[in-house]
Amino acid sequence: MTGIPTGWRRYAGFGIGRSNWLLVAAQTCYFMGTTIDMTLTAIVGLSLAPTPALATVPLASITVVGMFASIAAGLLAGRFGYVRVMIGCALMAVFGAGVSVFAVTTESFLLLCCGTALAGAYRPIGGYIRYMAADRAPAGQRERVLSFVLYGGLVAAFIGPFMATTSAGFFAVRYTGAYMMVGVYAVLIILLLLALRATDVGPKVEVEKPTPLPVSEVRGKREFRIGLLVLASAGGMMTMIMAVGPLGSHHAEHAPTLGAAIIQWHLVGMFAPGIISGNVLARIGAYRTAIIGVALFLAGAISGVLGDEFVHFLLALTFNGIGWNFLYLAGTTLLVRCYPPGRGARIQAVAEGVRSATAVAASLSASTIFVFLGWQGTNVPVLVLSVLLLVVLLVVYRTSARASGDVVHSEAKES
Image: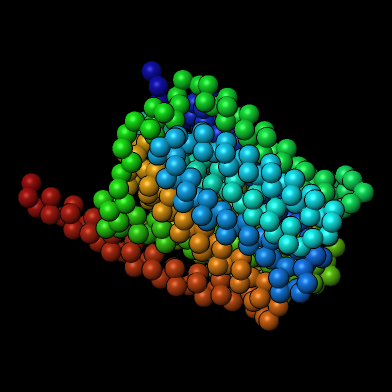
């Protein structure tokens, strides 16, 4: 007899299946690699860029390419399966890591942009792993598996920034070792995906046989529209603050170790809540979970507006990360409710494309906003967007609750 584990077993990952454990490991390697970019790429870009306004272009190139790669990956997965497509993305990351190493060695800003752009082709791995996990989830455990797969990011949160700063000094030319490690993590992902392919539950069974559901069948659903809005907002607001956090800390003359610390606690905030956020969502629903996430984004933006001491950076990025976790989980849950398991490739492609597009806009505008407004001013757009999103979600939640109450009242009256 199978069922949802209780007690400590519920939080330790019992019952999620071997294939999902492999996905957790792959997610860990993915975030270990992306942590290097989050921690160092803006700083490396600042040292190589012809003007400070272009410092975050290498970081933005990751999200630009990642946007198109995310759309393509979803469409190709419907034909070739997730595993083959994800392996192709990881191979691009290996090649991109090599180009980035050469760029740092030759002090070429253009090559750095090219290398990070190639690495951006493997961003779909981080987005689609959660959909793969949801499709493989045991009956009645999709929300739980969605939150648990983010545990991989928690491991990266504690180890990633340390590995980024440590590997940066592996060789005579600073930062070459860090970008080499991006390639190493991508190779590990390939090995894990090959192991996943060897399991009994494969992508052919889940993705290739069922016909992907057309977007036209779900675009009118409230869950689809709000899910897109929530994921796009979470990605944009998180990316902007994450991009300028290390730059702001550096500009405020905080030690490099403190700059790494704020990214570390940002990552802890992004993934540690996964221990409880899935259960919170199961208890209070996706809409209220999203409202909590927006409130946390708002708290982080207020912290950033108040000053540029280390504590302001720490609180701003930590609250920002926690808010992202709740919004990301709520938005994904709303989306996966729109389609049967294995038939969401096209819907996922649209969702990942929209989410990535907002991240691109945030990345490209982050350095310019920072140059003109500084750290505190960069938090103002996030504060405004948080307030607007909070109002929208409260209205939608009240409307949804009222509609549900009307249905219950009508059914009771008829009986």
